[in-house]
Length: 226
View 1 (tube, rainbow, N blue to C red):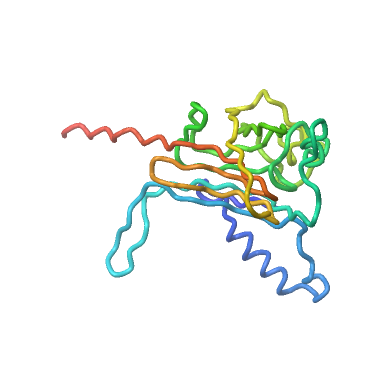
View 2 (cartoon, helix red, strand yellow):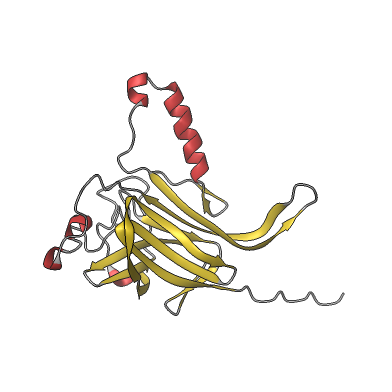
């Protein structure tokens, strides 16, 4: 997975266009390759308004995005039991990357409030501390490696090398069991309004969600009279 940054946003469509162009030029055998855990992107836009005439367009909104790798269940037992719970997903790391390959990455243009903590606009990694009866969402100031580099200890690949000293907030997630099995890991936004919503992850028969609020911008200061 490669990150493309334009105007503060991770531009996933740009990555898709580049990938499509490369596949079109590749040999047939190479074109058949698919990443085992494809790229994923969950997006929402808050605030803003429609403007224009016959073809109105949306302006002045603020984006919130989660980019991540989307592993597929492929019939595997994911969670474990008791003392082994979460160990297979952690793969030797202290916490779960809540995705695959690169670190799961939250980009927000709005100020969020999660667990009583304000999350300022910017980019953050996200992890989950898995326990049998409690999942804890971690939002961290650690930044992700764009490509794996074992000599880079300033950024993380997945959750390897994670330490809690850069945590912004830790908050328990609301756990629920689904009536069906989600085959491919999915992050999504639920119950969105301009005041907030819920950020959720679903995989297999588990869903974990955390509510968040959107902090309104302070009113603009009027310009002094000339």
